[in-house]
Length: 274
Image (cartoon, rainbow, N blue to C red; front, side, top):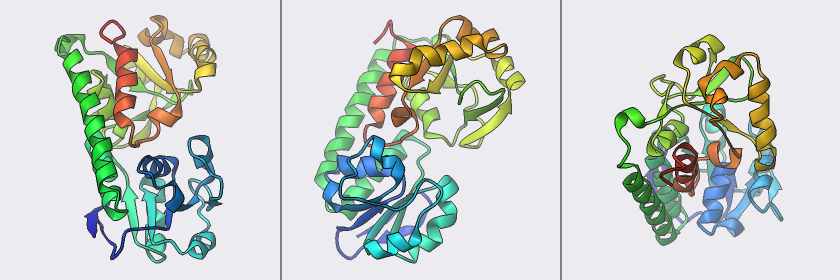
């Protein structure tokens, strides 16, 4: 079995993987969605929020893998991420075949589901998931047909009220999520995934909507923080109450439920349509 991962590397397995290590929550979520919970032997400490970690070995965190623990698990497949984890890839490939997952679009995310399904003999389940996700996307697009181009809302993803604004660009999967939800990322033309801009640059673009992450139970408090900020309170999105707060489990994780994330964002942007 041979597939090509996000880095362009070929991943070759002679037999379906049965001992898998996952290095980020989104990867683990895909594996569990494919029914591979029992085959996953190693995960990060951050996977506990969305996945059952009972009986799993914690191999470290997002930026500090314990290579000794990974080797001791004797995996036949490692499911890694890109970005800051790129520097690990050679080391991981020295332990076991490693599939690097760094999607920039919804389609790349769904392709990864199919790839992992193939590498683990879960082809049929992967196809079912992808079919269901594409049906959700089609349903969303049908509802958005009534929107005129000038009615599409401008959006910025921000990480809190720091005026050294962290945001998402073209290479973040979230830009494609926003697009499929009927919005336009104001920084979507920047050839980067996540980066910083000055508050003045954000204010000059003055997006209709801000998307931030936070727990549902803290959404009111999160919105209030933007209203109290001397800088952010000047933005149209804050003045008009268009600060959308979503759990990082959705807007930070490109996983097998990515179309559900699109639908969630679309409902936030256009409640009158959805």
